[in-house]
Length: 457
Image 1 (cartoon, rainbow, N blue to C red):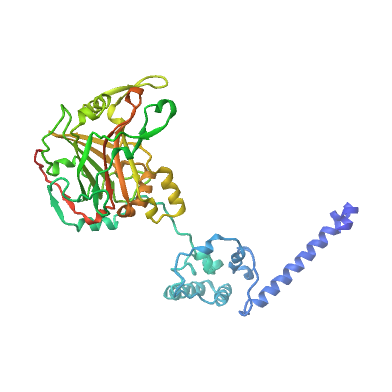
Image 2: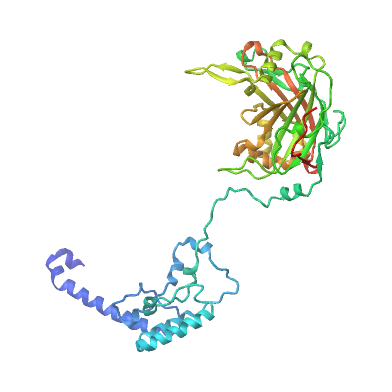
């Protein structure tokens, strides 16, 4: 190399020629060395490149075992199980291939058929160890077990799981038909501790927008009056969600109303039991209906403000109101101002991890507008609000689904108010409220629906 740097003319002459001679000698020595070791099965053959169709018979085999030294991620996957799979002696197969190169073509074809049959009997063809392509027969039929490994095709599936355990459980539940409203869950005084019950709760335990909320953004305890008070709770299981559930129960005749305001308020909370789907998810299936029944307060016209009564009337009549926007004003239904108040009372009694506890304290008691996942139905003496959690967002569904099994351990306070957007509509007042004490929905029955439900009484 030093001569080539100092005297360039040597690089054109004998330097290159001598290098070619040396390279030829090394190749011949390497071939003799390889040939001498082909029949020695106790040693691992050296690596040679892919088969060369124009080379000598020594190049008719190909060792793929060197792939083991690469950083191939396929080592973690395989297309066939390892148990009960035995691979042939690689060296003996190489000897067969080398032998084929020296026999007559007709004998090679016959030998190829015999080897193919024996390979099928040993299960080698199915595993890709021996191929049947004639072009491959002429070159090589050797492959390491690593080459037969393939990555399985993994797919993200967001489809509904038809084998959900709740589906089987619901189908085996006893069916009840047209029960008396509020006959499923018993009442329990708030100072007692009884699971699977409901209790009265004071409206002032909820915090709502105060009189000066538009100025200071502060919330304060609500007044100790509500428009409706609870008289019963039902829990029904169903194969499909039940809309307008008041048609399928016997509502009592409370015999009291105040003007055009219905004497009974029914709140139907529809909770799905099937898994949430991210794309194209279903919005109907197995579920629960927590049905809350309220009757109109005796002091409705005296205890509630005239502004609240006016807003209540507008909600019953499904009126529209003007909402000022950045560019243009928009007409929206007054019913979109209904707001849900919910909180878990006994957080410390639940076995929550640190992240779960942090999330619970952060969002517990936060109000949420019921729109657009709500529907309204009106009968002769009742007004029904359906809160459809089947239509909640994927994130909300997943979060509630993870918490669903702990409902039987939770004491839940539930309330509804009408959001105040103007100074004259503040402070906010409660429409209704109730406490649910550790209700295990699997203790209840399936509601059978009539094909032609009777008219409400």
